[in-house]
Image (tube, rainbow, N blue to C red; front, top):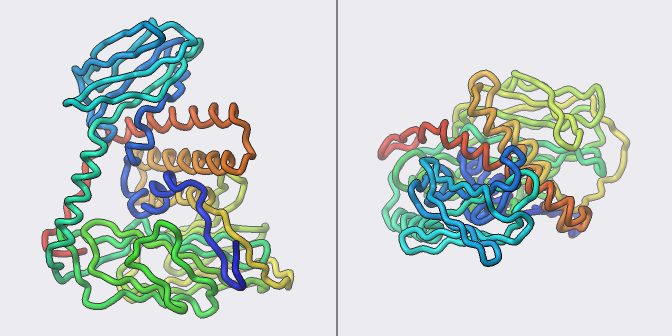
Length: 420
């Protein structure tokens, strides 16, 4: 709920938001989700022969396949066992159809058990069992603790290529709800001390600025400023802040200076009515796209900005109805996810390729999954429809993750001792 002149940013699903938003830098820079989101879940697979169930066995993440491992499926009193192939998949094609089944495997003493599932009469199912989830989490925590114990080195950070500015038209105020989704990238192997906090002075007419759920604690909002306090961990630190700019004017200009270099300029502005135009000297490569909800967005792409550089975006032709702004609670997680789908590929020319298409499709599906889960929580979708849609989304996501894994070339190495 909104209190006074402020407003709340509400996120429908923490699990998906953690992958797509909380990690907007991380989530759009990575290719694989939290393995706990997919472990043990049965995903409908219409392309498989009727009644076929495949169980894929991996270690810690999709792509770390475990071949030659025994896997069993138990249905009532019937137990079938087979061995995974080179892709870590075990296939079962003779299971009794219609009964409740459970897939199971043991990897290095760790027992992995799926959620119960019904063997389908038509089409098939895919199940993923992920070994070592707890060990991976413990190792990551230990690595983070060890890194935090080491003294930081002097260096710099940049706003990475997945940073973006999103502006959703607010029909209650005729203004825009603006989101800065930023990834602060430190390519050194240790924490970096940039000397003093990075301060982002928000536009003078910005109101209600607040960090979004999932934003890194290094970011705080003081008055009309975003303050990023180091040292910054190696890799990507995600900063997400939202604010509102007023409407009731035919032309809106958003001007923002950045305290660190920006690797690429990416801007998306909702187009509420025909005739609205966007222009920016820094994001001059324009295009128009429509999201899953039928909203039209104007996109601008640019090559990047140096530290201290200024981004200026002008939106002209806006409706101006002269209404008093009415601040309301915002439930835009699915919308932000859907828009970020397109932005995941960066520039149209510089990031073209099949892998980028897969990433874009992946993020579209995650956006749809977030929206579906939000509808389920709100009670606006019946259980049967929810289960069918969720199954189809998870099925396609598994296939995309597999293709991404096969095309993955590994992350580019950073300079030791130097943040860039």
